[in-house]
Image 1 (cartoon, rainbow over the protein chains, first blue to last red):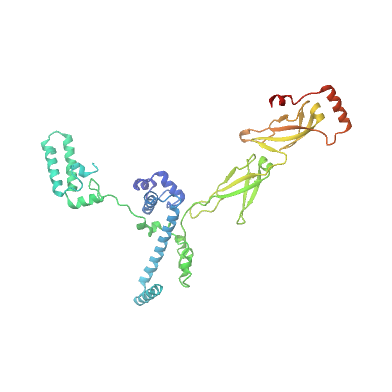
Image 2 (image 1 turned 90 degrees about the horizontal axis):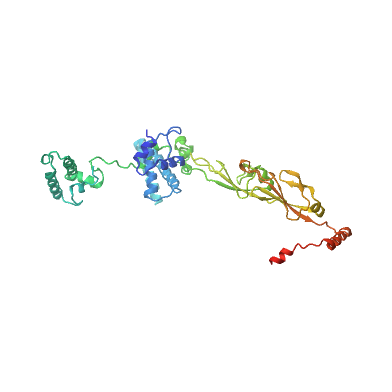
Length: 110
Length: 310
């Protein structure tokens, strides 16, 4: 578990003020509201927001839009991964059927 | 620890391995502690040079140093961990959004309800994007006396909802009131925005406002003007009696202390009564006669100043 201080120390160019704004905006969410406990994922997310603002030049209004899209993409990826894992567990002949049908359908769309 | 190992050895960044070795040996010869007994500075410098050569003299370490993978002391530099490495994991689950996946689910009768917020993982996979709601702006037109005395008003919102607004006494035209949390709802953990209500004050037929003072124009008769009188005057707090002193001309202003708007911190305004002398609607013979006599005996020239100045 990481504290606010850990994150600020380890993410370059991050100040307390800046980080707290992000938390207040809900861009970064502590594990529990009462205590400021964060994870490695939060730290990486803070570095992402910093890159969006500092390196890529997005301004504060644009960041939530980007985060929203990024969060949706990861939502989709996890859903897709779940499906693929389940398909992978199916008996061999069913897997072959699924695979064939997916290929056929993709071929048709092309 | 010096930042740039090349400058410690005094060589260029693109120096050959041979040049680096040569530079090192030259420095080592002059700085070696056994050749400089008791010279602490030389010893420190020697350590630095040796440490630099440890890295630059080793082709692999030099390459990693050049790439920034290790720092000048040979330590691994912490690599930035990208969010994508965590985004699929349990720690980032609260950020992932499956909002808007319902239409994907709609393509499948059997599996449809597995996706989106209605899915079995809904609680975890729901829309966790957070943003504070927008501020909503409204205009509220109120009566003059409501602005002066304060009031409770209800705004009907475009969506049919209502918003109760308490107007503080003495609110001024154009003043904006902020109602915390009464704006548009936020998303996720983000709170709602505020409602900003701009107050427009309808003018009153009698009262006018000048700061915290109330100005009223009150007509008086000729006899009241000449002889003085007690007259009834409207104020924002109801009718009161005011004393018109004898000889009050048009334009004379009476000040009714504390009858104005209650300002902040007990700073009450006054009511200013502007007098206007008014002739009766119909001038009868009696009055005519009085005026004729008056002209004969007491002629006066109220326009003398006017002539002198223009």
